[in-house]
Image 1 (spheres, rainbow, N blue to C red):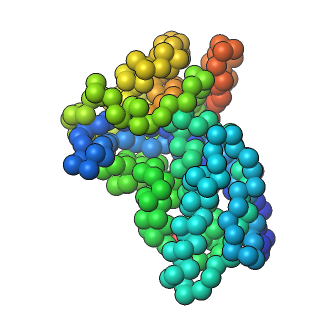
Image 2 (tube, rainbow, N blue to C red):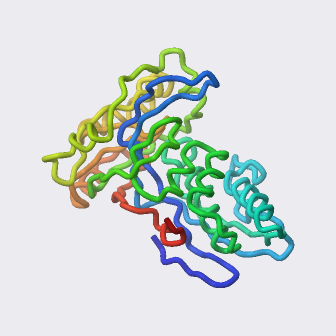
Length: 302
């Protein structure tokens, strides 16, 4: 990640890292329609990069064009306005505005948490830049209003997650490398969770079950659990099925989130480079290393 440049009026090169779901089980469904999940979130050392500059007029503006994402519906803009309103009411004063520029690397509809991570980085950065003073827990509560994955990125550590993804406990994960393949399709989350053939009754597991599965595996994750969303995604999107089949020849391949990206853990960077060199030209692929903490974690307290 590029170094963070901090000035009284701006925060530059703010990382919004990708995440992987090392497994993802759907254990039930609430009366309001939200699905109950169990997963392990893993941070990666690649992602989007955001830049923030204060404005005197209170306006929130995204200065980067992102095809297919109007500024008014962008999670970064929504996050900034949500924080501005909440912190302004708490402090009893009008907060400054901000210009937000985004260097977008993560694909939309890829299951890597790009939009959620951008929103979390916006909350963390502007809370610092505006001197709003909200705690990590308060920012996580705001983030949940934007999406179930947002609190994880503010939480800042790899986590065993339950509920709709907001009940988080720190978990140790292997220090390894991953090969990530983008099948070239964007998957709408609603299409996967709304499918009639989605498994919604996986038996609950414990964090200890996950941790025990790593014993004796060195720095490479094993094949604990599965992604309950993957069969549906593969049925609806053959591109995902093809990428998963190919990557399965390399190692323990799995889809992340609701798709479309698939990933495979590898023991070291050399193995990741070797596998990356074999990826078909029809797909975009890249390597990434596991992160233990969010790069902006230092901007938050306990």
